[in-house]
Length: 449
Image (cartoon, rainbow, N blue to C red; front, side, top):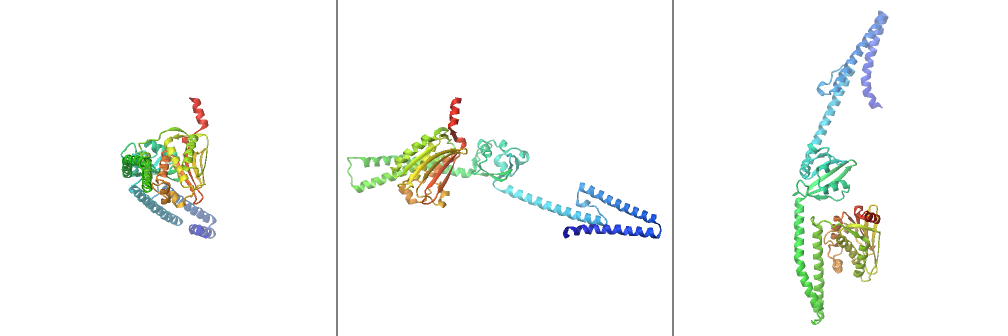
């Protein structure tokens, strides 16, 4: 309490002292001369003080309407102290505002110099601010478009769907309609409940390099397919020919050649499929996929691949999926074949298709060797292998999970992996609710037709 009271006393004590002095003078005049004279002196003195205070209050009111350091009033006594402190406070405020404005301007220049586009939007997707790079990328203007809805200005369907989906785990890559030659990567960062930052990055060169890589892999794989088919055919003919006697060593060599040629053929087929999945021109075929029938088919194939070494079971809810049956079958089949390859004999594998309010989930649970945690983030990379020697023994190409990832991305789905070494693994493909067709929905649609 001593801190706040000290400034107040420095203002109040001189004023009280002056009032006390005038009162003493009035008292002396009343005693020495006449009581009326002392009273009149007191009244006139207080009136002068009141008029002086009113004048200073008027000056203060006028200054507050247009505050400026050059027009701070001059005062007497306590008012001199008040105006001095007012001058210092206003000067400190101006210096603070100037520093704040300089920092803001420096921040804006820094943001504007970044190679990425930055757009600040509110909860209604209305533009609050953007830098020049974002103006070039999206064809918007800070001066003309502030306050307008971003999706009304950038009308690309994929961009509008991304911004209104509220799912920003993965960035969006698209080509804006106003500049089709430009490939943009868009990411959204939610930093406040009512504001988000939209980041845009020019990935044209990266996309061009990726396209060259995809074309190269696809062309080489396509050219390899024919000679591999011929080699496989001749090897099979030599192995199966009854009138071509050969010793055990030669037959063993031919068998090894046939196995490796088959492995190369599977690798070429997987590379071709990956190239097709990555191609933006290849749209997803929208079919009504019966998941129950698909699981029965996958289970039968798994039994043939297992050769009776594993216990296999499946269960499926009564729901279909909108998507490409061939792509989903390939992705789910890769998950099942991986479970068989990496589960020792005597283990069990369970296929499950379940539906909830959030969507559908296809899972493959096994009791296999499991995967160490440090390998999980990289499992969907091409040719990444946890155990290279074991992968060669099981005949894998190293592309199965990469195919799974791309198929799920094309169906707006995602893959989760839960695994512990020695305790098996569970691979789950989560499909969005928009692609799941419940039995009641199918019945209602059939009745409507």
